[in-house]
Image (tube, rainbow, N blue to C red):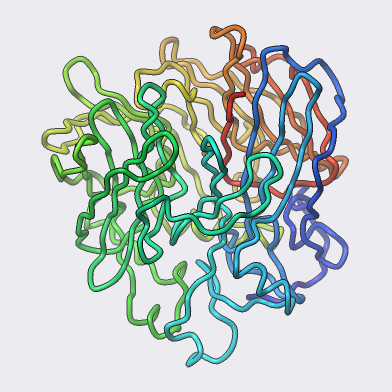
Length: 485
C-alpha cells in the first residue's frame, strides 16, 4: 500500500485511473440502469445484445493506494443494445472482502501486489482478497466476474446485482477458475483452467457445458509455479505456454514479499509447452521453446498437416511488463515495455515449436477474434495498439487495429489525441452474418469523460458508426465480452 500524494497529472490517461483522477482520490462511481445518449451517428439495427466489461474500479481506501493495478476492486460495466435504445449500468462486484473493507474504509487483505496490512506476523496464513476484476463470462442465467485465484462471483445479467460465489458444480475448496476461458461456438462447451498451490503446484483443467456447469476436470502437476494467464483452444487440443519463472516461496509464505515481488525470471529454463487432449483432458505432449513471457493469446487452430497455428503477444521478460503495470495506479509510468504480436507454429504430438514470425512490430496487447471463430481458422485479429510516435514508457495504448492475415495488412483506427480505448470486442450483426461491429469503451482525456464507440469491423479507418455517452468516467478496464441477444 502507498499513501496517495496530490500531484499534477502529466498524461491524459491518468484521468481514468481511480486513485489519481478525482478530487480527494475518490473511486469510480456506480450508476443504475441509465439511457445512454447518442453523441453521433446511428445505432446499427442489427446490433442487439449486451457488452460487458470488467476492471479495477477502486484503487484506494482511507488515503492508501493499492500496490499494483491488479489489486483494484472489480467493477462491471453493462451496456444493453435493444430496439428501444441503449442503456448502461456500472456496479462494483460485492465480494465478501469488498463489503468488509467498505464497512471500515480501509484495506484488510493482501492481493497480488500488496500485503495484508499490519505487522508481519499477522500476514501468515491470511487469505488474499478475491478482486473479481479481470474478465466476465456471460452464461444463460448469470454473469460471472472472473479473477485468477479462486471461485468466480455470479451476478445478475441485467442489473449486475451480486449473487455470490459460484463453484460451477465442481470448484471444490475454492479451486481457482481463470479469467481466460475459451468457448466453442459450435458445441457450446466452455474450457478453462486454474493454477493451485498446496503440497504441489497443479494445473487444473475444466470442461463445462453451455450453462457453465463443469462436466469434466483434471489436474496436472507442474514442476514449478509460474504465471499462466491464458491458453489456446483448437479443434482437438488445449495449448499452454509456461514462462521461465520460479517463485521465491519462503519470502512469500513469511509475508516478506508479495506475489508480484516473488517471481524470479529464469530464461535458462526456457518456455514450457503443454498440450492436452480437449476430449479427455489428458496430456498429449510436453516440450520446451525459447524464453519469453506472455499474458494473452489471440486464437489458434490446426492446419491441414496437423500443426497448431496460434498468435500471441510476446514480451522479452516478465519484470518490465510487471513493473509497468505496477506503476499505472500512480498515474505516471516510466518503464518501457513492449509486447508484440507473434505467430507460432508447433507440432502438437511433440510440443515442438517449428516456426515463429513477428506479425506486428509495435507495442500492442489484448488480441481478440470473432466469437464464432475461437478455435477455428481465422483471418482477422483485432488488437489494442500504441499509436506511431508515442512515448511507449509513459502512455497507455491509444488505438485499436485489425490485422488481416490474408493480405498481411494492419488497419488502424485513429481515435485522436488523449483518447484511450479498451480492448476491442467484436459483435456479429444479428440480421446480416457477414456484417461485424467492433465496440470499445473510450476514455477522452480532453473532456474527462467515457464513451462507447462502435466501428464497422471492415472499416476501422473510417469514422465510428456511433458514439454513445456514459454518465461518468469508467476507469481503464481489462477484459470484456459481447453477449448476443
